[in-house]
Length: 513
Image (cartoon, helix red, strand yellow):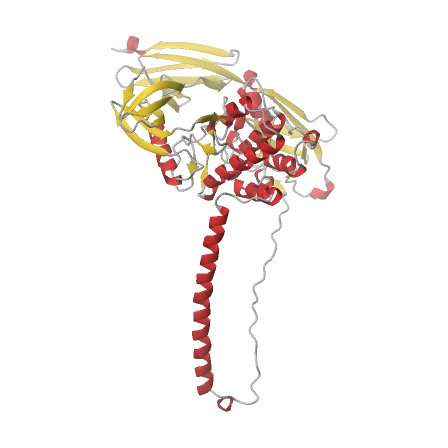
């Protein structure tokens, strides 16, 4: 065990997460306790994320955020010295302190107030969970662990398509790799509030795939049975925070904070100061405007004095100026028109059509003359469902799609498998239920190469061995190539049509001449 680093002596190891170790430490000279986060990895992207955490916390500089005392490096180890919070995280606090509903409401408000600090400064935490919310001995809230926090002013440090966050607290848009907004944190916070009310997690499941499926599709249980303990406005707020669609959720915790303040009739710790500052600003603005108005009136009077009515034609018609700014309300009806064009690009991550009504183009036939047909897509495991390259739902579906008759390009996406595409035909008077098992659609290739090589399947580069995940291919013939400048190129045509799994051990040294 490491005994010291920089100016800090390590008292004990609290937790280890991959290349990161969390320790309780003490400054050698100041004798001040601190949390020490030590990072060891040669991965430059992870190192940048670690450095960025220090920058984010330093920039926030707020009582609701765990402060950073120091950042440094010693013998290839990077460390962040953070404020020591006497107490524990939210999970530990709730487990050891039975709270009344009123106390839980007050705690929920304080947590919202802390997260609102991030949102007001355009940060998204992306990993809100009870373990990252600290509660001190006075029940004050401090947020921590900003390793994956994101600000629109910063560049992404993650590779495209990678998932960041804790699965149990992810928002639907995180799972679907859609652009994130503060509403993603709102969803995670909704899960935490749900647990504070019920003592249960709304999307608990034994496997990650099942967790994702429930977050994407499961409607949370009704909370009205808790209305004797908690006010209806709070239970309704949780319901809204856990809406699947972003536009149906509060946009950020600042909106939630307003709901708390309105119903609890309390002010945030900074609101009084902000109001005082606003009053000063208003007085200054009024003074400037008043002075400007006086000067303007004086100038107008002088101008009028030199330009009497005698200088103007007596019968000149008088005209008035009218502000003709007209605002036209936008048409918010959502009608998704699907174009049957198989030559379009890969399936994008677009917004889900909440009505699930897709209109297929039918030349010479009016849409009104065609009957909508219910269509169910079933998959194992869960998948995002695309029709003609547009995202329409995720499995398991809560309700069928409503489609016009015709042919559609169906696409299925799951992070563990390649995108699967197939044309389906929707016909009236038939059972339009389509079921797919991805395990039976793809074969798995486990590849080991000695000493190493660049891997190509059908000419497409997949990476350098050792690969971080198995290769999945469609059940047909594929050309495998392993290239190494020092040992030559290995090439083989493999027939996967009847094989669910293929294991290959390739020793390139045997090819050396």
